[in-house]
Length: 199
Image 1 (cartoon, one colour):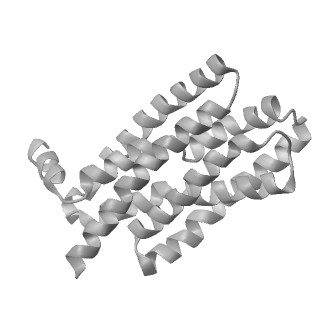
Image 2: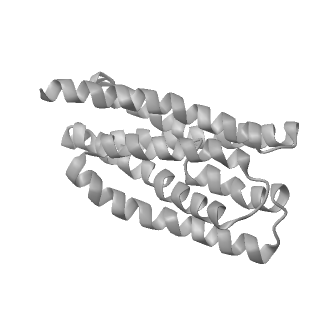
Image 3: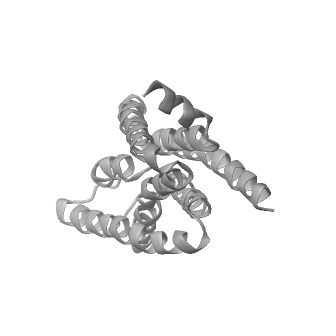
C-alpha cells in the first residue's frame, strides 16, 4: 500500500487534481443544494410549494449535466470539460448573492448551476482513472472519494458557520466561489501542461 501510494503521488497530475477536488467540493451539488432550500426559505422567503418546484428543477439540472457533459468530455477531454464546468459553476455561485426575490431567471440559474457543478465529481474522477495504471485505479478512486467526503464535511461546516455568524448567505456564496476560483486556476494550469506535453 505504501509503495502504491508513493507511486500515485509521483504520477503527474494526481496531486493537483486531488487538490482541485478538495477545493471545489465547496461548490458541488451536495453543498450548494444542501443550503439552497435554506436560501430559498430564509433569504428569499418562498413558501414550501415554491421551494419544492425550484429545488426540483435545480436537481434536474444535476441529473442531466453529468450525462451530457460526460459525452462531451469523451470527445474533448475530461479535464477541459471540468475546467469549463468549474468556470460556469464558480460564476453562478458568485451571482447568487444578487438575488433578493424569486424569478424565472433564478430558476434557470439554479438549473445551470446544478448542470455544471454536479458534473465535476465524475469528470475529475474519470481524468484520474485515465492517467493511473490499471492496478492502482481502485486506490486512486478511494483516495479521491476520501478527499471529497472530508473536504465536503469541512466546507459544509464552514459555510453553515458563516451563514449563522453573518445572518446572510452572501459571505458564504463568496467563500464558496473563492474556493472554486482557486481550483479553477489549478485546473487551467493542468490543461496547459497537458497541452504542452501533446505538442
